[in-house]
Length: 114
Image (cartoon, rainbow, N blue to C red; front, side, top):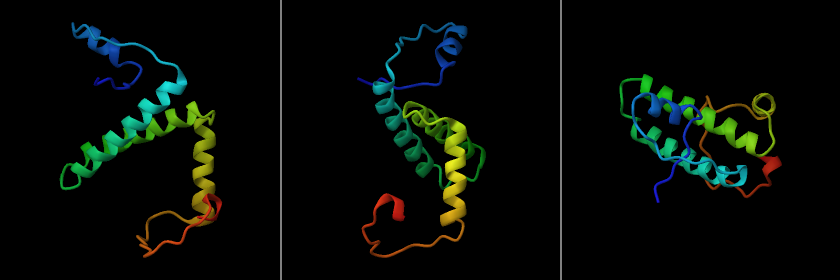
């Protein structure tokens, strides 16, 4: 089975182009698994675009990752604003990833210690 979660307006778009998409809706619990699959697909696409000189394609993929992350958060009951705030708090407390630090033999830590 090759079922994939798609953006909300995609079935209507396909209909507007004369296509007859075969689609259905699932409950949040099942959608969560489809969203994890979508996130994995987008990360794979991003890896494959690394050598692409065109910055638009990776930017679009990252925009999809952003949207999938918000959808996953919503399935967990986390509003998009709260996710953004949490990301800001994490950045303020622990920093971002701009300095490219790589740690060998990362010690096992609890989530709240990282």
